Each structure stands twice: as C-alpha cells, then as structure tokens.
Length: 257
Image 1 (tube, rainbow, N blue to C red):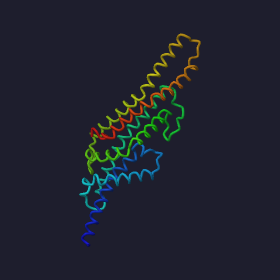
Image 2: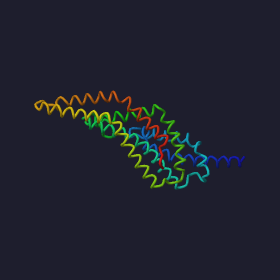
Image 3: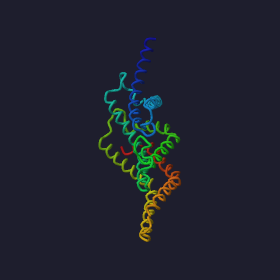
Image 4: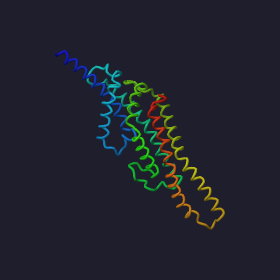
C-alpha cells in the first residue's frame, strides 16, 4: 500500500511539473494574444482561461514533459517557455494589428481620423476600432479556442520545451511577420485609398474648372458619407479575408522558425 502511494505521489509530482511548464507557455502567450489578451479583459478572466487551457493541453504534450524530476520544472523552463509563449502571442497579435493599421490608413485617406478617436483604451480612429472589434468578434465566434489548442500543441514541434528559439531565426521570422502585417493592412485599406484618390482627383478637376466654387464645403460631407457607405459595402468582404489570414496564422503561427 505504501509503495502504491509513493508511486502515485511521484506520478502526481510529474504531472504537476508538466502542468507548470505548460502554464508558463500558455500564460505568456495569453498576456499578448488577441481577444484573450486585450487590455479590457480582466486579469482574473485571463488567469482562468490560462488555467483551463493548461488542463486541456497538459495530457496532450505530457510525453515531452513528463521525464522531469521534482515538483518544479528546471530553471531554464521558466525562461524558455515564457519566451516561446511570447513568440506565439506576438505572432498572432501582429495579424490583429493589421486591422488597426488598415483602419488608420483608411481614416487618414477619408478624413475620418478624428471621429470617435478616444473610444477605445488605445487612441485610434473609429474605423480602426470598428475593424478591430469586428475582427475579434468574428475570430472568437469561429472557434478561436479550438484553433488555439491546436496551435499550442503543434508549437512544441517547432519550439521544444526547454530550448530557446534561435535569435537569428526569430529575428527573420519577426521581420517577415511585420512585413506581412503591413501588406495585409494595405490590402484591407485599398478600397478606401482608391476612393480617396478618385475623390481628390475629381475635386481638383472641379476646383480648376470652377475656381469660385468652395469645393471643400461640398467635398467634406461627400467624402464622409461616401466613406461610411463604402465601409458598409466592403466590411462583409474585408473581414472574411482577414479571418482566413488569421486562421492560417493560427495553423502556421511559427512558420519560418
């Protein structure tokens, strides 16, 4: 009986050690991850979500973590798993930042940059806030939690537990991610940029043909209402495009490392 209890105690310590190692990666990722890691989400909710994901993930990744002795992971795990979690979270956060950048570009091009600029914790134009909240809601409704479980499980193939990511590979991966973020943002804002170009070109022609007409008084309301109508027409097409990119990022969040 005593031997069985000792064996059970050793097994529980091994599982506790594995759970702590998983929690370090999940908790660090949730600190910066979109949706769950937003600044307006209470810390208790983030902690509860991290613990829930830890209970789900530990049995799946335990074979790679169980051969550890003691009730705590080795000291290097507190550093390597935190860094790995931050890399995962930042990679997904950059895809969401594309929505904010696209909203800022569209707002600057269509003179909507000052409307509702302080409606969110981070000052941004209204278009950026609308795109951000809509994108996050769509991602959560499409099963974000399920995709995140798969992302964390596959992350151990690219970033093994207890191993630091190579600085060179991480730097190249980060540059590629930032480049892809601005490319996606420009693609999402393209309808507004094209509309702004055509509007300003038309306004210049009218001003040249009729110098006595105050085209700014006529054009300002026109570009404002036109931008809102354009947002109404294009948002149902822009968000699914972004969602496909986001889901691809979830499936290949560490591609290139």
